[in-house]
Length: 145
Image 1 (cartoon, one colour):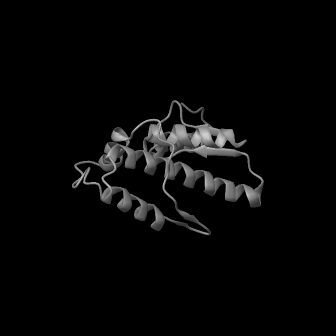
Image 2 (cartoon, helix red, strand yellow):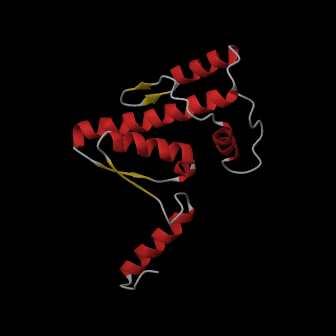
Image 3 (cartoon, one colour):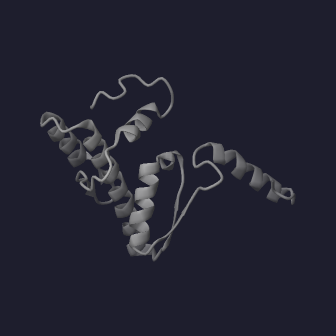
């Protein structure tokens, strides 16, 4: 939509570029619908509106990141309503995005969640091998690496 990465040359190139241009100190976000599922229709409408109004892509990127942070918070808060949870683990390739990770951590902690995130092991597929090794070691009663 914003012509930042018309053709990816490697996995996650487009989101990496989007993160790299995000303006700082932007608190605005796009709207979305959160029910049983998350609908990004209003988000895309907001992005199109901003593009038509020549809003800089750095601001659009920041607002999009803030939207994803709000989606994470909305989803976790909805789960807390029915399951009385406080502990949240943020992991997976999406959380290699420093803006997304820091923003989600900040918002969740501010709202009384205990947040856990990767520190020494990659949050993406690189961490899967270590997890598989730990499970295999446990099954064989070996000390894990």
